[in-house]
Amino acid sequence: MKKSSSQTTNYSLQTKSGFTLVEVLMALSVFVIAVVVIIQLFPTGLRSSRASKNETMAINLAQAGLESVKGTAYDDVTSESRTQVSSDPNFERESIVQFVDTNLETVGSDLGLKKITVTVFWQESGQEQEVSATYIKSL
Image (cartoon, helix red, strand yellow):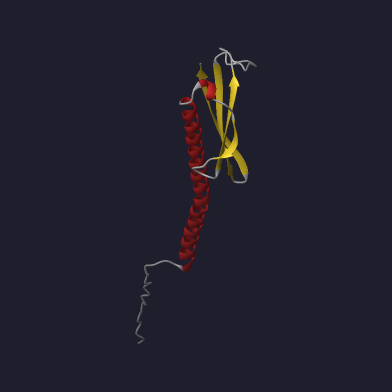
């Protein structure tokens, strides 16, 4: 008599925890792209920061020019040609004095009002930038 033996083979799949090479490469790709994007933002931020610094400096220099006019006697206030600012050689300043009427329209003769416009110039990214401030001085 034949003995019927039924043998069952149990194949158990052993699962190993971890990442496949494809998963690792995908994660690394995403990480590299994120880092590249972030690095590209730095020059833009630095340019914006430098532009803000220069504009603030120019506004302060224009204000300083007006403050010096405020302390000057009416008859001594005159136009000044464009010259380099002594405190910062990257900036130039000019003052233009005009006679104006009570409507602030430019006139040819002195009616007791002077419009003083101080303009500050500087170079940024190969282009000339400027900021102006105006003050009205009366007799």
